[in-house]
Amino acid sequence: MHLSRRTFVQLTGLSAAATTIGVTATADVAAAANSAYVFAYFTESPSMTGANYGLHLAVSTDGLNWAPLNQNNPVVTPTAGTLGLRDPFVLRKQDGTFVVLATDLNGTDFGQNNQYLHVWDSTDLTGFSGYRRIRMHTLNTHTWAPTAFWDAARGQYGIVYSANNGADVFMVNYTSDFRTVSASQVYFSPGSGVLDGDIVVDGGTFYLYYKNLSNGLTYGARSSTGAANSYTTYTSGLRQGSAMEAPMLVRNNAGTGWWLWGDSFSPVNNDYYAWSSTNVGGNAWSVLNQRDYTPPLNAKHGSIAGITSAEYNALVSRWGLPAWVRLKSSNFPDRFVRHADNVGRIDAYPFDPYQDQLWKLVPGLADSAGVSFQSVNYPTRYLRHYNYEIRLDANDNTAAFRADATFTRVAGLADSTWSSLRSYNFPDRYLRHSNYVLRIDPISTATDRQDATFKVTS
Image 1 (cartoon, one colour):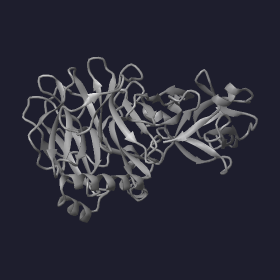
Image 2 (tube, helix red, strand yellow):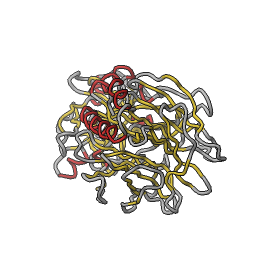
Image 3 (cartoon, one colour):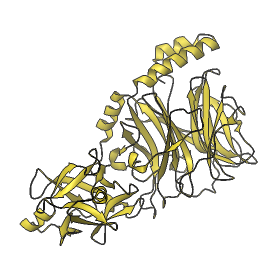
Image 4 (tube, helix red, strand yellow):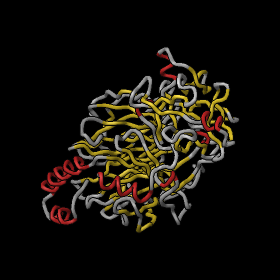
């Protein structure tokens, strides 16, 4: 929500009913002001070369396609506890500033017991202050995957997290300042183990999405009060892929619909899945095609919040957009252009070395009006064609090499909002994949056009 400090002080002096009405009205105005999104996460990759347990941020204008900030390096890292974090959650507080909560866990040793959460304050996510850990309970268990929400009736925030209180449940503590918290209590325990809750308040309804540990499916529950043990599950079970957790429920800034994201759990599988719905209160989630969304590179278990255009611009100015691009296949949208043993191909992401898919898009070596693709992890090498096959070769600075490594970027042959890449020195041929291997060919069929269409993304 976006309340001024003055408005917040005035509201706190009203009756509980008036406070609820005032906050709800202001929340609607705040949501209307949001025009972009921020995604908080940590990173892992299949062989863990991309693992980093600091706070990462990415931004998006459409809520679906993401640009990592700070070159996908952390913007802040814990300095106490385990010195690492997982499952970061960003909440806009009633005064318009942000608080960041995160699991205190550095790595994948899930057998650790920890009673604390990491906490930071931030005005606009361009800087972080007041770092602290807060103790949530005295149980001999974990404190995982925090989410938080404003409870207008109580005039406090609820912090909900996964713990084991004889069974895997969600616990809650209430707070006014994210420094001192109430005693913990069970918040949601539907009779089977649960994990990774995400709570969004929409009007007078509280929505809680969670993973059911008994069957691995994601469900939605709702409550008219948000009080402990007041939720009723109302959706069928959802899952894409072989395993999934960490649901993220996101209302789009236009106020016309919702997205539900799910982490694939394993860093060796597809990183995120997504659904859309025009009615969060119904039971009708439609699977999003992976063409429609691109999560941040190597992102794991995060949270998404709406931000204003000014906050978006401040984040980009402070942390910077990626100096590299990726090329996503149109007809195999889980696959990205990469080099492997110096051969150009498309492979299902994620993979390691993950840097094999990162390209510096530079002016064409033979014609600056075109483009060339310089490898990020082998910066003396470029994608070029040789006997019509795409290879990663060192630039020998010959005219032939420069021409082979230069492409003209045009509107996508299968989708004009995407891109196709025409060979500079064989202009009747385009970059395309065939049996997942890259080459340049003349394009004639609908399949050819799909094979030759890519999304230039982060």
